[in-house]
Length: 229
Image (cartoon, rainbow, N blue to C red; front, side, top):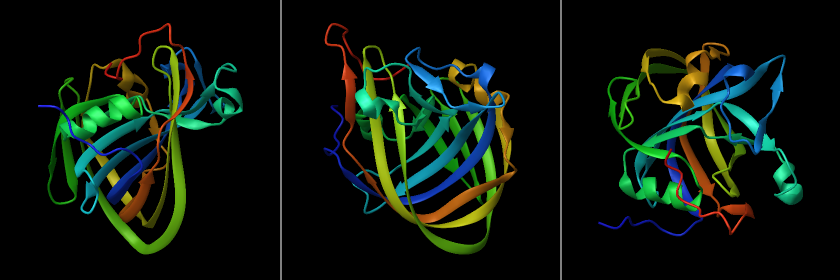
């Protein structure tokens, strides 16, 4: 059955947990065309769990590992290619429509996984063998905020930027990684990462605008394909 998804932009609603991590630069595995932003041998990574709910055009859950902020190593993307953005090393979703949309539209490495939520915890079982479980507890006053996020992906022969803006209510959260196991190379940087600190940011509700992809560079001589590795 052919995947069905709307053309961007997407106006999404949901909730999310964002966990900051200090990642050792020597453990990063990035495409050759991207360079990490580091300081004192460390990069800033983020592990995120997000649930998209109605009235989003697609509803699903996802787990994302972004090990570093990056920029393009060369001039292929013009001035825009020099801007700092986050690199998505691995992303898991539980809906086939958004899996295909993420791969085709934004070149994001989405892989299918099963998600189970129970009493402030989430368990992820991915098709690539990755297993991750975490529990969290929000605390404190909810504070309104506006912000944005962008990613930079570099599949063979391309440089693609994804951008979104959002407004949300934010509060602190404590968390614990209850289980983690993966043989996928994209997770090597996470296995040695350090939490900063053991506090996270929880968004009990947000509204986000996922914008159209920016193709900063495309080499027509190289056959492109959705991000699946």
